[in-house]
Image 1 (cartoon, one colour):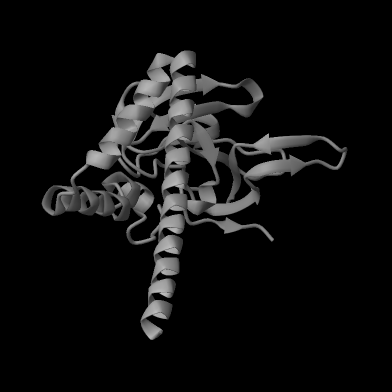
Image 2 (tube, rainbow, N blue to C red; image 1 turned 30 degrees about the vertical axis):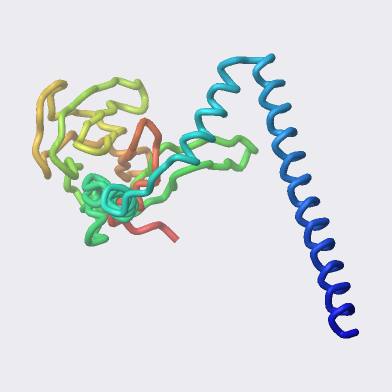
Length: 226
């Protein structure tokens, strides 16, 4: 009696296993058919697209991971991501966070960026305007080449010096001591400043990186007028 019952349950179990197995196989067949239809559709639209997809699938399936070669690639990539370029570390002495000495001793009275006037006008200052508190003439903050000397009329001469990783501009000069195209060293006098109507001397100073003006106060030590 028990044997009959066991045989009956075994038969039901086998039937169910076959039924579920058949369903899984049917799902697999349907998925394969869908992929084939999509590939056929892409083949009709563009042979190159479908060929690329087939190639990618084939490469992914047949790719053999090499612990030695692929591991080296991953390691090298990680090193490149973690290591900053040498220039990025040395430009403006970023490694020790020190700044360049100012081109002259004084205080910033007109800051970098947008300037709003009392009459409602706005202007953008590419550098900073420095009111001098000394008779010392402005000097080059680093070694470089004099790329351009401009006469801007009432604003005086503007001297552009190209350094290794940046460019500086000196404005409001009444006399220029350097020559265009010549290389100059650090602390070389660039020119002389005239006295304004208020009896003060002013220097316009700019710093450019990748053809864009940046705030000079981020790279030189200067006080800001309160």
